[in-house]
Length: 113
Length: 117
Image (cartoon, rainbow over all chains, first blue to last red):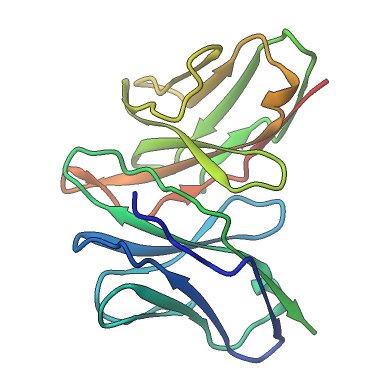
């Protein structure tokens, strides 16, 4: 699985936007970019995923660089409940292959009131 | 639709005992994954199962660990002769079968926190 690089930690203020970066310079053409987050003492939670185009859903937006070597998860208005560890994961979906997620260390997001 | 359920939520065992962790996937999901999270670390994949089949067990320790997902009932992760190093949070995730492949998204349970004394 291709590797991703994320900052260890980031801080934000409540109600402000947050941009969480992820570098994946060795991404292949068939790798999807997935984001999960893990709130304290809980299991991970899917946030968003994309392949080439920017994506939006009710939780966040995903901005993917044109060369796909980096991406940014955008939380438009951070709340205290967004404090979590955010994981950027590359997945190659192959017919009949393992669909495992390979987690790195992620970015620990602290949201200040 | 209830989410992924795991039980027990907390399990305490003495060294040498057996630990059985149960995972009930979301209704309609036929794929189950087990992950382990050691204290202050990220999640590590252990095993991927479909009903009655182990698809990928590349993350399972060679000894003492086994997993199953029977035709009926929950998936079971079994750890025999537990040691202190097995203390961790064990998470189960499930996903539906979509057009012959696993879905993009995995739904995680709340985890079982195993403490070995």
